[in-house]
Figure 1: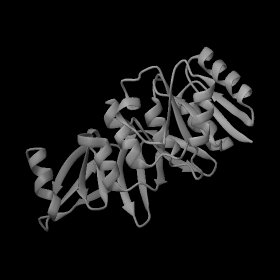
Figure 2: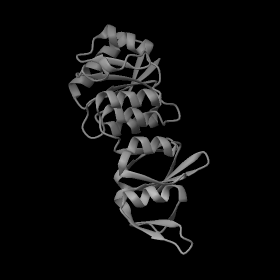
Figure 3: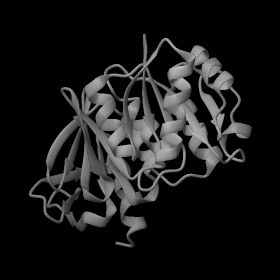
Figure 4: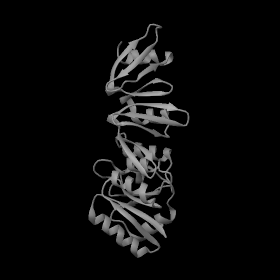
Length: 243
C-alpha cells in the first residue's frame, strides 16, 4: 500500500485528489495539509511515500516545502500539482519529479505515482530558478520525529562543525546537515561569510571590532558570542560595510 499526503490550500482540490486516489486503488491517504508548514510537520510524523504538493500556497510555497521535505530522514517522493504550466512544467524536464496540471486527471495521477522519484538538491535549485520563486524563508532542523522551522529573519549565524552546521537563532540553536556553501548560495546577500566556518545574518550585525593583534571580530545584537573574522575575508567584509 502506497501512502500519500495531500497538501493543497484549497479544500475542493484536496477532495478531488482524495477521490482520484480511491479510484486508483492500492493507495492510502496518510493525511491532508492546507499549508507548507503543516505538510512538513505531518510528513515528519507519518512518513508518507509520496506528497502531492500544490506549487502555489500562502506562506511557504510548494517548492520551499519540497526543499524542507528533503531533509527528513526518509524523504518522500514529491509530485507537484499546479494550475501554472508556465512554471517548472515547461522549464524542467525530468522523470525525477511529477507535475500534474489542475484539474488533475486520474490516468496522469496514476502514472505519476508509478514514476515518482525523490527530489535531489540540484533539481530543487533548478526548479526554484525556473519558477522565479523567492529565496526560502525558513530553515528546517530535524528533531527526532519532528521538524522545527526557523525563520531566516531570526537566525543570527550559521557555524560549521565537522559533519553538522549549528544554527544560532533568537530562540536558541539547532543542528542541520546543510553546508555553509549551499546556505550562502541560497540565502544571498542577507548573509555574509566572515570565516570558512561562519555565515552571519547581516540584519543582526551590531559592530565589527579591530582587536589588539590587528585581526577583526564581529558582534551581533542579542548574542553574547564574539565571532572571529578570518584574515582572508576581512578585506571583503570591511569593504562591504565601508569600514
